[in-house]
Image: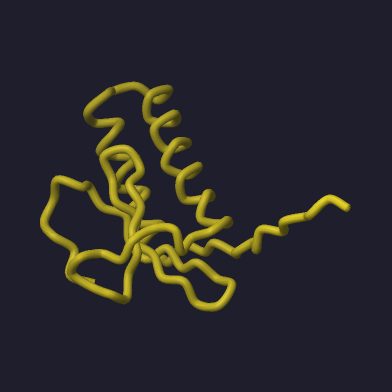
Length: 103
């Protein structure tokens, strides 16, 4: 008899702040590249990383400044999130080279 492994699926939701952050990422990438294609591809990769939180979000470490937030690296950006039951709440997306996130 073969074993079956069921991965628990989590629901990923973006906070209003995270949505504003992604709009800023879009503006910043377009400003630097002047290319809609490059901007679209960059945002697609960030979205794919965020969507990966549907499976095993607890694999990501806690942020060093706060044991409330976990984070993942998406390109040159950090995605901060909380896990509450079966919901992953993406709270903030910021440039990794910016000011430290305090939570």
